[in-house]
Length: 356
Image (cartoon, rainbow, N blue to C red; front, side, top):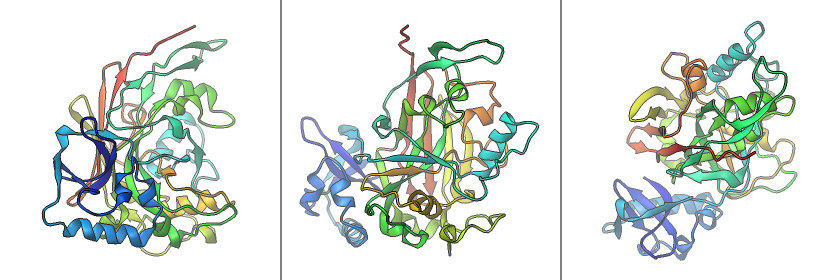
């Protein structure tokens, strides 16, 4: 039960609604010409009332025009504006801190005060099923005097949720936590592919760059936020009281069961319910300096990991750096909340094309 963009044969891409193994052609179902567009953006910018009315109309369809899923091609569901990636799981942040700073405090002083994040590259966000070419860049071995150029040998995944902005804001406007649902249209699963060796050499002092920007895969289906209302849960207690602009009331996280499959085997299961920083807090922090958001913007949670072994959202945590992705490996991310299934995120690794 989600929105996506599909085409059939030589037809132009248009918006559809997934029901099981079929797609409802929303324009042919009489729900509006806006669904003949090749992206969700024109519909999303109509706002929350239109989203709710359309969802009710979809549920009321008695004999919708269905197209078998195996007869369609799926496309990027929305035109991506800006992309921001956060670092919201305390389990993930703590594990990574212990790995990289074994003698020090795993969390840096700012982590419990604000949702740490960085701006990613919107132009390399791709839909599920897109092959991922192994990236190249500079890598410096710990015992080397200087870096070398080549293909990444420590290619990793990051299991995340992504929030899709439907209604934008104006420059200089702060979006408060209680306005999250007025601006965010829905959720996608995200795999923020990461070249750990490239990242390790480049990230100081300004943070992620080429180790992240080569590809980020999202689901071809966007699940409306409204469908997840009954799966909202309280986020864990925060050890420091947030500053006023980051304070929230009520249930803000989502009880979403998540899993990672590698080459046909499920290697990790976790849940989004325990994220330290919630979606409303991420959005409030993103705009507190007056930065505007636009229809189609995407902001993601960062890697979602649990406290137990087997609930890690990245392979560097799961295997403590002892194993990474090889050419030909296929990763599938899945998510479910009750009877609401999020669109899967699938990607297969292709060999790098190394040039001098």
